Length: 86
Image (cartoon, rainbow, N blue to C red):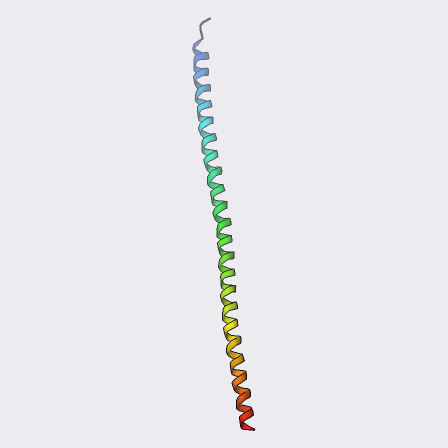
């Protein structure tokens, strides 16, 4: 049985639709991959910001230790001066 002109046109349109649908799915998959990459980037930025914060806290702890040592020395010197003055 020979295909009619309408059947041939319908078949061609259906094939075009299926091809376009497949292309759309490929594009959607690429968009999803890009969104995943963006989310991972955001997460890594949050992690990086956290690491920066922790690094700053560590540096502040080091500065605080140095300040405490200097204060202890000042207290010792001050105590020694007071003892000598008496």
